Length: 295
Length: 81
Image 1 (tube, rainbow over the protein chains, first blue to last red):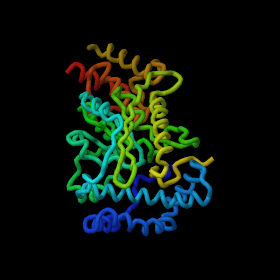
Image 2 (cartoon, rainbow over the protein chains, first blue to last red):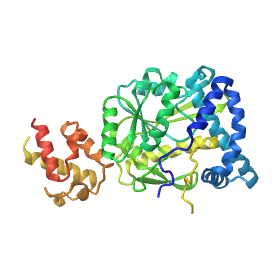
Image 3 (tube, each protein chain N blue to C red):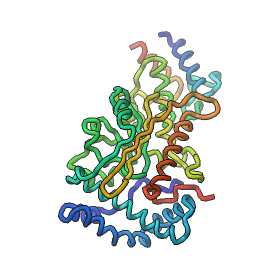
Image 4 (spheres, chains in turn purple, red):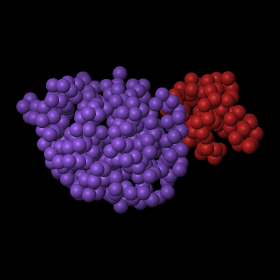
């Protein structure tokens, strides 16, 4: 059974309180309130706390004391990024500074006229800085699990006054999803996946991540490897209070190879980049469920 | 294009792509069962058809394709349209 059920935690009252606070008192006030909210999550989000604890103990080999502190920091960083996500479209975006790595090369790919497959992770936050994507964002399609999409749709639209990107929902009709993805790519658009979450246990690829076995969704890697289009791994990370970095990495085209399937060749490259990012910003790994398979 | 040529070409390509013996392909055989694919692997079939015959497929085209015969019929109609 997949651990993640396709829904994202978070009530709309909480969002509303933070949105009001950002609007009337500013970003720092929202960060200050977060200091009081974070300890609440430790006992009242037991699954997330347990997963975070395991992450710090087994993946980063922290002592019990250090792991306890890191669980708090983990929640705090997650909360900060959600607050930034809410603040940016409410007029705060200009206050953030952005660093871009490999951006020119990334733009060359976007300007090639071909469809582009982009694979990210629940790591840091990439939607922030949308202003830099400008007209490109009109060609962005985000592949999202239907339950997650329905839950955040209203909140996102309320906050941003409407999306400036398209969503391809993943639902029961898998065939429809595949054809929608294919149509977008054929149309020279960009299709973004999250490469670290699955909801169908039968359609996964197994791979070690940070020394422990984990499952990854087969879909993004299988589709990306078959389309013969450029594949970009993207990660946006919070560097300090008002600074984010956008990091783009370009996958080598997989080759038909009897020893290793093409989707696995792509997954290898994705894991390599993801591990690199996780070592730099371990507290920005935002999968608050038992991601790894316990030995 | 002749139906026989279409069948020969698509069978050969499917056998190569999914590493199957083409002699196991029968007109009434279920495409998904024989090739051991699911809807996710359909992307392979779609890309293969596009590459082989230059045909772009839509979901509506493919929804009724269940057997090899359905596939041959669909290809024949589209190629000779």
